[in-house]
Image 1 (cartoon, rainbow, N blue to C red):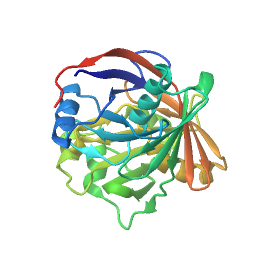
Image 2 (image 1 turned 90 degrees about the vertical axis):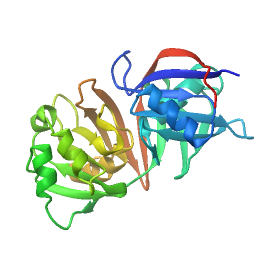
Image 3 (image 1 turned 180 degrees about the vertical axis):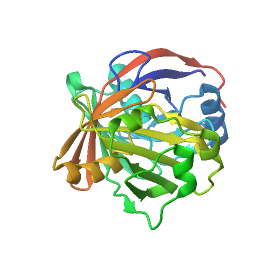
Image 4 (image 1 turned 180 degrees about the horizontal axis):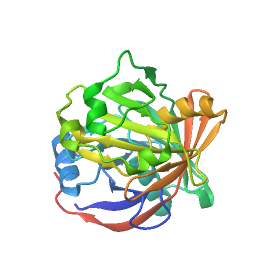
Length: 268
């Protein structure tokens, strides 16, 4: 039996912007899901399967090379598909069961979808990392460690973030660095501007990274004296969202648009 499959551009209201994600409305075995993600070649492909509760779904995410524990844009894409296709009413809240935690998604009207994610507080790094800085081509004013061998590098100017040209081969070679966020105070009406690089997980640059804002909200909200941030991710495709810090949760709101829908015939 063929399975419904979609490509959704997340954190944008315009097609061919934001971050594209594959969404498959079912699960298979792990090796099959990994092969589908490799075929799709998006930074993540989400696999969504309904549970007994009509508003609850199992959700897993795969890059072209590995399964990941948290992915914001593919969660937004999955919720968008469920709302847009009428599988879930806009008046209801979706609960996603993942291997990391329960996540929730609510329809936000013209603003898109609001995701309820756990906050992730970065930790001061114990020492500078000359190899990482050389690969990025920057000297950050602050470096912090994040969960999962990710790092947050703070620079003092949004222009530095926007024009950054990392050495992706050098980044892939750094076995202690799974990925890196680079962020600065914002410009052009945004509170912050950021980018995300993850060559070791098969993504040189992630166009828009929802999960990154679980870290950035924890860092920047106290720094800027705000509970809510208007954020821009300065990749080539670009994308925007709001991130609101709410205790130990981060509420991420962004739009999405479906650019492809069809059937996946190669089922297991």
